[in-house]
Length: 312
Image 1 (cartoon, rainbow, N blue to C red):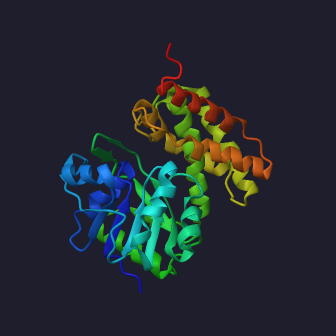
Image 2: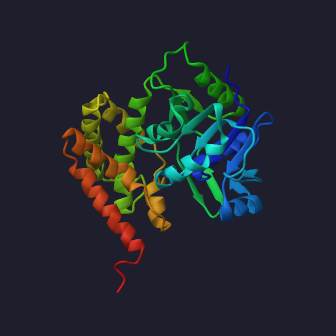
Image 3: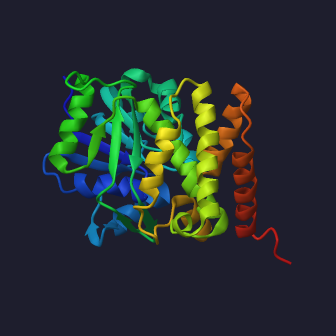
């Protein structure tokens, strides 16, 4: 029987903070943040501000040992995933469940390759937020989707039920999705279509409302992603395009997607996980991905610009 009382989090950006906000206020939950070195000292000394509320943090070093976690949430950037997988090792016990809420389409496989599928569930986030200088903000209307690869209403697995009970108790907005792989690929296509054009053009989400050509680019990028997904057996198509057209028009016009946030702050982006991975998969299944390749080249160039490569 699964019971979620001890929850550890690694990765305290906007997405991680959206979990911490609720878990820190739950009297029944033992909540810790995994961090080491200077980051551990900084979090212990300064805590974190989330949606204008300040919280102190209980921070545990990955080298420590003790009782294993019931649930570990991985919320790092994709390029830090391998290190996060290593750092959680001391906290994975026989009943530990792991949610890797990263963007992309393969983080679960990477975690399961180390710890086994008996410890890993599928998950992804639909949530907007930002993090800068120890302060995080997220829109409370966002939510997590999670579950086994396939979930039948009324017959959820015991570990899915346990995590849903935790979310219900703490106020974390969560939903079990019937076909998790399809949901993850749909989110992946949305990220490629929304996130990357905004980053290249340095315009927030109002881009798709005020420019028909930008909106056409979004749709073309999503269709290209769906073509790869279809070859991999994921059923996505024009119905989802129509659904997403309505969703885009509900965004706050000033909303800034994560890749543009990263570029504006001079941080490394996750373009390799988005466009780079789609190009790789397209090559594997024989589907051309020229739009993703263009996105990949352009954002790598913008990263080089941030690094001062073009300064004279």
